[in-house]
Length: 246
Picture 1 (tube, helix red, strand yellow):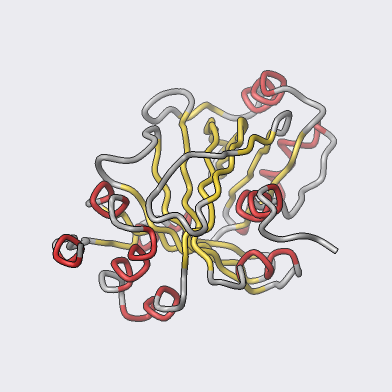
Picture 2 (cartoon, rainbow, N blue to C red):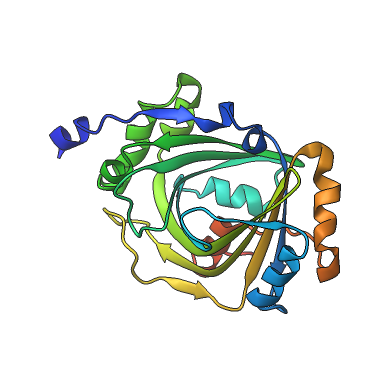
């Protein structure tokens, strides 16, 4: 196995360098259990234009990494204002044959952003043992990020869901639903087994430049809801019994 891992030579580039919309922004989340997705979609279309990528609905897969204490998860539950989380993300295939994205998502109180590295060799990376993936990424990342990945990281869970995209001026909205969580602790390779669904829950995320965040959020006023600190990763940890709230 060592020889095959040595052959995985990753090429990474931070897309945030060319995309100020993800480098720094205001991000707010709204959770819905009272409305079906048709109602939420119709509301968004009344204000925002649909954005289509490979198709009108994307399938999103996010593989989350954390240390043995699940420190990133607990930082969210404790409401720490400065925190980050690490994930690999890909789209529309249960396991990518081509590119995926390694994301370092950070929060500094009300401001969020992420470093987003395109991994051209996504299929080879996700074919490696899960325990080896952080080290493979670390040796390809800029030196300032190595410390995040050279800790005792492990794959914790895989979150998958369906997502629709909308644009409103400089802001973006996403409508997420059909959330599923798959446990990966102690697994050697990526697997979608023993998953758990989150039925009846939809999520709208508003991602906007800091200067226009308030105007973008007004799009959702008609739904009479308030933003929450909902995290798909933390919700997966709770639903899978990895952490508990006392």
